[in-house]
Length: 165
Image 1 (tube, helix red, strand yellow):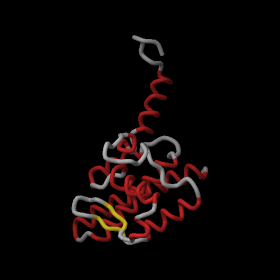
Image 2 (cartoon, helix red, strand yellow):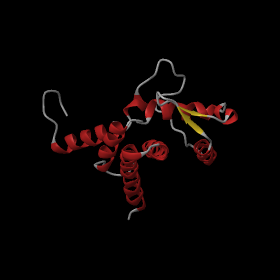
Image 3 (cartoon, helix red, strand yellow):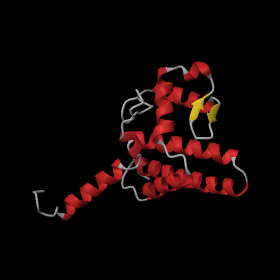
Image 4 (cartoon, one colour):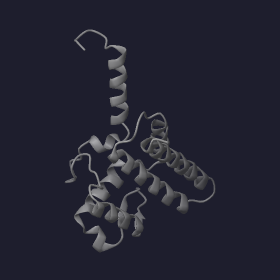
């Protein structure tokens, strides 16, 4: 592509696909001044880290009124990987229904298979939505349940694509 010329259709498609892939979790690519966590943190690089993430999710989590997620278990919360978990949960994944709906809509039109970090973040968003659904009542419960369902369908679609089904 040269300066001043419009890109060819194939180049435009490639640029659009790159842009779509980059915007699923834009907060992961924005540096935070107050954070010592690396840009674009990933929680699962090994089997031990997968098991640790599972422990974090099974531990009692607390969601403050300003939607800050923390691990109540002091021993787990003191682990180095807990700071990455904290950063992903509090700085990267969406926690408001409109933002989760936007993510679900983007995922429904996402071409190909999700990158590992996007799958991980979508799964954490799903866990958050499940937690909020369980805590909600009445109409709010229905709204959170719909968000939960949309995220589940997006992850299921991705798993079906990755398995070749």
